[in-house]
Length: 89
Image 1 (spheres, rainbow, N blue to C red):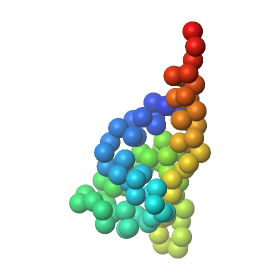
Image 2 (image 1 turned 180 degrees about the vertical axis):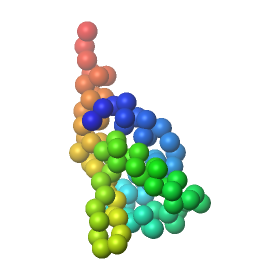
Image 3 (image 1 turned 30 degrees about the horizontal axis):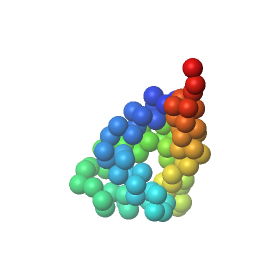
């Protein structure tokens, strides 16, 4: 995990909205798509960016992909940020 990849993924408001939706519960691509007026290929691009940054995980259930938050990455980022800002010179 790198902070650059994480922050790059978080830089987009659509991706932040997807993460906000996933805070409530795991969702399929179709359920996520209901909240946006974007094409499925565009949504797929956003989901791929979040997966590449390890912010979400995807699991196939039948014919659907179910997305979940990867909380361990958020914890790791929080620890890195804490260490960075708490570093005493």
